[in-house]
Length: 205
Length: 128
Image (cartoon, rainbow over all chains, first blue to last red; front, side, top):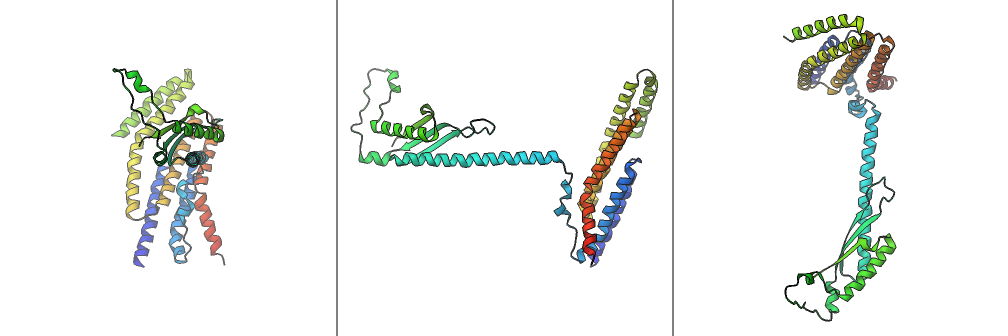
């Protein structure tokens, strides 16, 4: 009880001293009346708040959010813009995840054992083509399939001399090419992506 | 002694304004504006240290910081509004000066709305 009283008295005394100092500081113009009114109100609240806390009706200033009560509309605008931006990023990330999982499932339907997809999406919200799939990267693993149907013959490349140009030419598996084309067609049908924007690569085992 | 600097600045600018007011009143107003701003900036550092002192004491005795910050905000708004209004009045624009004062008052009232509403709520809830 003594501690409570001590806090109360100290609160009032310091507040009164502060108010007097502030009254010295404020310019002696027309604003003085307004300032006096509100400093007085604050002092009244400081006086009655402990009494109310006994009656369990303490004024909860934190609930009133007095710190930010400036009602500054610009701030609200900024906040809402930030919210909008975070919402858009969330939306695009969810959309991207769904597209990736759909592409992966398309690939798996074609008999691929494991598929990993990555897409680049137009993330500019204000663009007309927002959400358009710009590029698809697909890494396919044919390991188990190829175990059953082995490539007819894996021919070692015959090198003649040191012709480095030959290095660029790759002998591709015809079975892989078929699947590649099928998947490309399907993705193109569903998402409307151009074939040249679909990059499919096979993981070597 | 900073007060001598302030006084010197004030006297020099006052003399300049008196001289210039006859020939070029528009420059006289600008000089008074700049002088006011310079004096204000000169004392700003000291005001900051005083506020810091208030802050530490308020924390020490567990004073509700809400009261304190509201008080300081009210004082700051009052001071800036008065400064602007006086400047306008010096330039002979009494109408604008009173508008600035009005704006200051309105902003202070808006800031104090939560205080008033909570007080009113208490009064209403106390009624049987």
